[in-house]
Length: 227
Ligand code: SF4
Image (cartoon, rainbow, N blue to C red):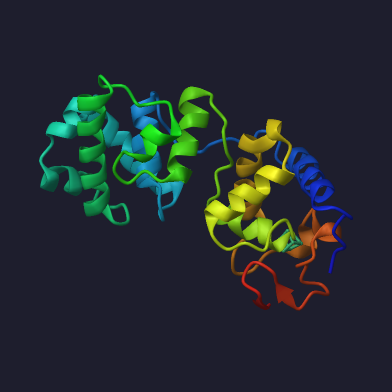
């Protein structure tokens, strides 16, 4: 078991430093060429891999050009165009409805405030944060996805369970200039080393400061259960 640094603030800063060194090019892996495509890609990525989303959006973004195309699309046809994506029926509905709202209330532009974004269909705080950060260069929170959730708990940065509560705690700990990058670093490390089922603690740059490290710790702090 690693020994976390004395304060959670120091722990968070050390985690960021080490992961930055390990993943210097860490960034969003969804592909898009404008804000609407970003919004759609993020809606599609809920409980689906970025890889699969990128594969599907390659043809989707060629077929549909702008909010009007999606808003006017037939539900069945759009759903069929998304059929390799998890929950494609619901997501097609979210996209159509969101585009209707974007046309009716925002002159066809993807809005740039948390309140307006979360009023769109299928858009929660996580999706809105991604769109604000990467679409509008506005960083007002930390995107807490499944990797951020798992790593933050394993590393002793939070004991919270809900993404919204984890985000609030992380915003107290992670230096504001790293709020955006923190997510990408956790995602890269989560994919490469600290995966959900079988993290490779022996090859982890955080092992000596991680209280969940498998060498000695019996407990995975992410789940609270024995390894
Ligand atoms: S891989 Fe192991 S040591 Fe590294 S952060 Fe995950 S649980 Fe901790």
